[in-house]
Image 1 (cartoon, rainbow over the protein chains, first blue to last red):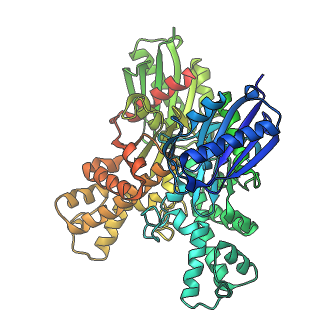
Image 2 (cartoon, each protein chain N blue to C red):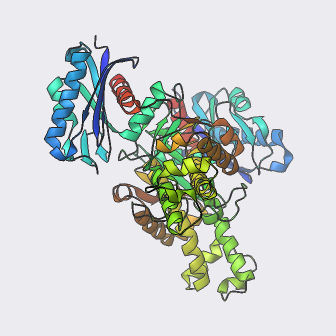
Length: 316
Length: 316
């Protein structure tokens, strides 16, 4: 009986791997730096090493492994197991799944990191037991994944839930994607930091000017201490995040929206504001029936999500 | 063998029924005025009459009928077969499915009109053969329905695809729902007509002032004749519709978005503008892979959709 899986969280700075049983209990873990600059083949070899190491440390042979799940930044071709391109990894139209599944003779599944996180939250995190849930991650960018009718919804090109690039302000600021007024340009951690820098540059009276570098972290910190400019920036950006979540509820009518990513480290202020805006903007029946919850998986979210991907895909 | 179904399109002014085979070919049709003011029981009896008449005219007995599908304005409780309330019908928390299925001893399924139209387009219309498609109707209001992973996606309270009430302009005009900047307040037929009336009231130089009553129909007509004000109103409202469709593509990544409803009678100008905005605002790969098409079912769309609902639900 194959009673174990391996999850790999492939990131721009590190490759995290875990061997787990089918309940998601982690048996062994291993992390290597990605060293992306060394190129495709080198990164692939480091993935091999991580897999070999978690097998060895967990005292399992590859025959005991049901599946390997890999979470990677996109865009990907999930069906073909190809990384099409990604800003922080060297892969260009690189077949990632095939060499791994062939080397270890284990079924291997790839998905983008937002989908993997959604699957992780659904199987092991805040979304356990839901039929319809949307996961939103708010950090440098804004992304998402959805479990609909009980399973991951990928869309026709595996790019569903690109909600960071939905428009919520027709003439809003320009986004990195080239569009104007995207959620990502208005409500991401980057957007919060940018607003703070602009306020300092305009010479506004704010404690934010005491920092050499200002990011969303400092804005949350100074807002908590009572700085008016920092509070106004947060209120405005979190209002936009609330609009984004309200639009998700109107579109997907989920039982739960789970919000994760660095910005949620801001804590209760984030969720209070989002819930207030959802109450204002959504139909009561939908707003009341949809729970808005913080992500349940901690720092291991990426690798636990990859474990969950391996479990759910090999079970289908 | 039960080789026939009945579809009922329940509207504020008329009840349309059709008997069809499992390929959707209509064998008999019958229409009665709803006479909503006569109350719940009277409307229910008129539905009975329509069902009896299509059976009689089609020379079939109720034993030969696999299922009855009913499309109704919402909000509904689809699982319980209840019409919760609706502005143009007398029903208030009215059990609609039970008395019909009991009287005829036929499995009966209820769904809201936007979902029914989406199912109709998927089975018999422009969306045939797609795995993931979104149907959007733009007339007095803006609504939608989605086929995801090959079947209707209803959400957790059967209100998914309330895209008319997603926000695309934070400080936009007030919507009937109480929110500001909803798609419905910016891009519906009603919104187009309202903008025209306001232009006339402001005394703008436009041929629209020659009409006693001005609706979206007149705006399309005068824009086509070259009226500048009418053209500007259309361009602005269709830009908002384009943003709505771009947000749908970013969220659902569908193979196809089908647009129906009165506003699409405006013709190619509608689709050209929507496609232009989608190209501007969506990632190229998603914009290029998603077809934007007019609805394929004509004036019988409601009743054909109800037939499709009966076929698909009884097959599950």
